[in-house]
Image (cartoon, rainbow, N blue to C red; front, side):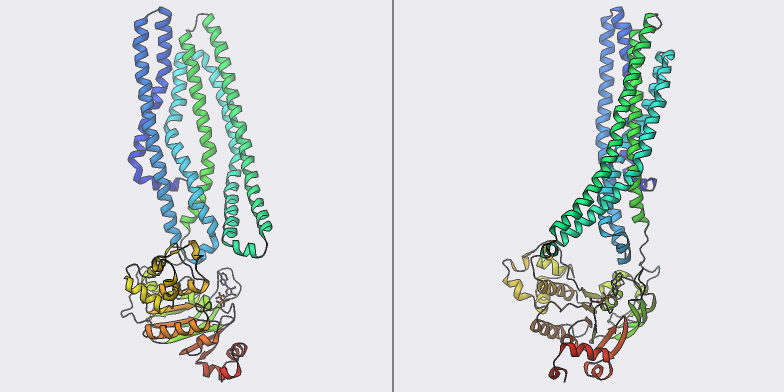
Length: 575
Ligand SMILES: Nc1ncnc2c1ncn2[C@@H]1O[C@H](COP(=O)(O)OP(=O)(O)OP(=O)(O)O)[C@@H](O)[C@H]1O
């Protein structure tokens, strides 16, 4: 928790203002009962109206000062807490952005969302409360004791007796509720995870008639969270009546024993009234502190979850002294590359070596799970290789700044992802300053202009969240246009033609050849017809290179390739 306090730095001044104002407010609160005692003991008892008016006016002034201080402090503490939350969210998101895919896999997307939203809100609430109570509660408690003792030292034993009872109640409640708060946050993670999966998979859920099953899954996660929350709240609910009981018993004891002392002529009525108020102030500040005791551990649990994210060092980072490559031409080289996913038993890529140059098309083909996408993902450093190296223009990708490396690459992922915005926005995602003509041209080459112009608003048509209002093939063509507008040196097409019909696939490849003749093209494909005319075909089998060559060479030399071809093409096509 304390580790996060450094993010309050930009709010040093408002924090100081709040602390000073709360100090003033606490002093005014402490001063008021003794003024009231004066009015009763000196003004009312002696019938001195002028004194009553004078002291009453002072009381009003003091009360007004306290109220104004509290209002201004409230304003600044709210601003500070909100700003603190904003800074935390920004920092967390910026850090998460630097994660490699491995860190995303291990922390989990749903948990990262809960941590960025709910956990930060918990801390924000506590920050706001503690700012106000940090000064007030101890001053009120200590000051109250001093003032009460100064009013009547002999009656103070009542307070001395009540405080330990109150402390014990707080201790018992905090001890039982704190572990449950930690559990609540992880159950919230679980609920978010179920919710996220169900919302994104709604089509599959409906198609497979699993609505009831999913509903039950959600109900279970929801009930689980609710049960724990109710358990905590039950414990917490016991705290208030317990405290009220102690407070009321204390009041009775003070009035009872105070009454006896007044009878004996050893105490004045005003003093008793002031004493009672100080006793209440002491107890009330203890209740406040107890609330903090309850909220603090919850915020501590949230802080630990946030710190876990902030302390996770991204596995992939820029080298301390990055190299430049000189000319950017797009030479790509794999040198004996082996890579295993963290936790996996077998490497997904084993001893892969090949090189690809500008103007060449290198196709990668292989069965499902043979490691094609993995190989593509190693090039922009989504993961780092375990052994061997990948060179771009002669420099190991690990020695290049990530932004420089990625600026040379135009990736079309296997699953085309679009963002909310217009079609033009989505294409411009590849190059923020692309002109309208560039955007149109990229769409033309990607064979997307026909369907774009058929849409009512053309390039200004809106893409719904997740790209649900365009077809799979249209999405892929927009993803291709997005990579094309970038004009990179290396194009990576990860099975990007699979959702296209044969004719569009052929037209697209012909247009690509004309358009990006000088770039290095890596195409992952399932269809032999897509890779047949590539300059080089790499056949992957269980992460190994089973053969490299042109279509006709591989037909002669590679059994795995022949099998793939035989399963897809007719005899004449093969010939
Ligand atoms: N994030 C991951 N964590 C662990 N293992 C993974 C991960 N992604 C893929 N794998 C495993 O790595 C192997 C290669 O997967 P990859 O996605 O590269 O295959 P692919 O050839 O692209 O398959 P497809 O043609 O079906 O897309 C598979 O055995 C897969 O189970």
